[in-house]
Length: 105
Image 1: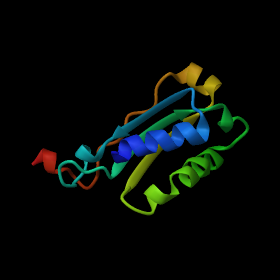
Image 2 (image 1 turned 90 degrees about the horizontal axis):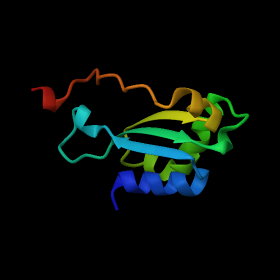
Image 3 (image 1 turned 90 degrees about the vertical axis):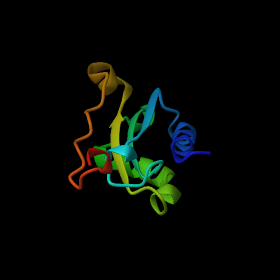
Image 4 (image 1 turned 180 degrees about the horizontal axis):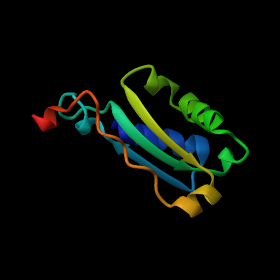
């Protein structure tokens, strides 16, 4: 199973999200081809109701603790309640990697 699939499965199980998007952004960074080390996660869940941003991120980090201790180098988190998501409908774009990318060479 890929790291992306593993992240998706764990977050679905742990948060029962209304919306979940996990994007492997490793290709945008200075890593070998095929890497699974940089991810953008957008998750919408009722479980975030009443939680501040740091609490939401702690929830996700706890679910993905094993992955964060291993192969994941960067995890961009965008966590919303269903109401917040209804108003927004999209997560922000990821900024370019400041370390450069082999793809730019």
